[in-house]
Length: 489
Ligand code: SAH
Ligand code: SF4
Ligand code: F3S
Image (tube, rainbow, N blue to C red; front, side, top):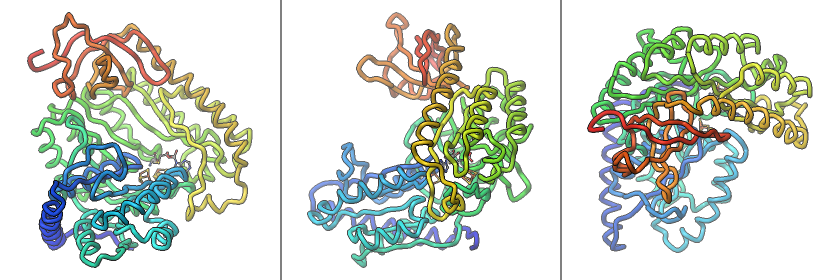
């Protein structure tokens, strides 16, 4: 397995294929008497979303427009960007692919492409080859830069094309046209892949070995985003903290560089691994006002035996130390986590230790998952799998705990006036808007008429405002807008 960087020739091939497809879709559209459309379906994490923004950008540059209907099959080019993190993610694809058989029969020109992490699991590719012959293209999530070339070839040959490689690739973001979904938020991957091989996880197989983008390229992209008016950047990587620049730069350097752009009201990042989180990063969060005061740090389990079996290289005591440090340094900061229930061999005592750890850490929010065996991972072959009724029971108990702490965290905000970055309308009917605090708390709020503010979504999205919080819910808080910040407000 090698790590391959894209070259000038790749870019020339890319541009040639885009031009050719643009002509093809334009004449096909003329025949059909309408502009052709695309639909990119996103099933995974933010990195998957970021890939979808690139896929959409490429399709748009081929002259297609985004399909407006919410229907899956309401487009001329349909791209599945799959995720394989848990089994129910897989079901989405195979459940939905069936729908396209008739569609493809009725309109042979429709293009169906499948990519994303599921395509790095050989059984899934075999299943498509065998049972879904009407899928035109299976493409490698690590080779988005070849997507136009492969799509052109699949259309030319009029035969299913499968292109999955064992190598790892890295293309700078500026290789691609990017169609950013939110006009205020930019997703910026800074590194790809994962070397940790937690025994339950498919990501290292799907995304390959860790490789970091060039810091100068990242800063160039940030500078463009700042001048284009983006207010929030989300720095992405499976382990953003293990970023390693070619000149020895660390994640702290990237975080500082991003926060130096005063145009950004918020600099966020995902995900941090407990083994790599440095004190320097915590200090930056504590002192820089535009860096979010929210840390997502996956604990996974409160039992040292389970952590070891998961190949998570820290003890629960060490995890607790990091939590204490974060709480002490980042005033009012929020801490969220991921927990897996029912990992093979997890005993009642192990599970109780997880509850104790949740009690200590008092997470502001928690993403809880039932263990799902992923083919090809080490843990899938473990013999001591936990029966599903036991998993379900533990899962119920855990979520009761974690929900309680989440609600407590929300309750602490009641009565305060907080700065909120507006994300959009949350309920169109009664003009309730939603946004997030710098601690990533979700806020739904209304705008009192007497303030005389234009409540148009376009006008408000990405703006900072002050909201008085008057009610806590389990997953969000409600409030009333007090004032709008900046510009003419
Ligand atoms: N790289 C990130 C995690 C990305 S996956 C990190 O380590 O923080 C997001 C979460 O999905 C993981 O933290 C884990 O809790 C969960 N997850 C991953 N594989 C899983 C599996 N096989 N079954 C259940 N949950 C899983
Ligand atoms: Fe998966 Fe572990 Fe890597 Fe996170 S750190 S992506 S959980 S292998
Ligand atoms: Fe899913 Fe791949 Fe992300 S498995 S969670 S889309 S890295």
